[in-house]
Length: 256
Image (cartoon, rainbow, N blue to C red):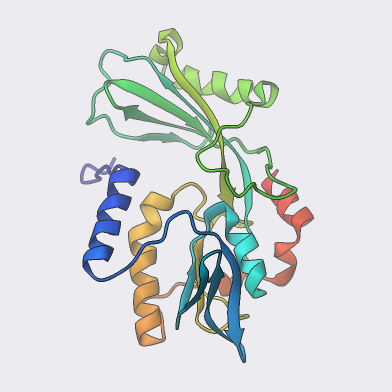
């Protein structure tokens, strides 16, 4: 129990950061597809987009589920793979309030937290996951939903409900199944790609992007300015990955 923990809405945080970036002179282009990564003598020089080229001393691949495909444009291995992730939100339950601690039960592969209005979110990270997008992830797939695999999910869902019996009697307000990207060792991929100078990666956060985002952004910013990371980042450095780990079959097997 960590009473000093806080809560953040990812959408609000993103919009606030975008506003701050614009105030600092940044220009954000939305809905513009990157079609290539430009380089000269082993160093990145910018990107090609649908609207033309953008020159840049540094390029950061924050492509989420698409980070592997973006990396391939630059000849950079970004070993991650999308798989199904499930959660449900109950109808309001008496006693569930905003200050309710987030509960994680590793034995049940489940987590529980309050959702707006006294509802309870029950999420699962089942050990036998369902790989998704083996033939590529559609470019326009954003916040989309997937059909659930009830046969695989039901045992984990039933076990999770036993942890908080009140959830069994509450109605289901929403059920969601969508893809999240995961790495072979369940650690993020952060840092300068060994294949291409000044090409950085911030991806593979294994469904914990909002938690890692601030620290990862600060590390990359200082790394680009100073030429070295400010801390020991070996556990998350993309340089730890080997070429064979970007193989689709390997990624599929590691996912399941």
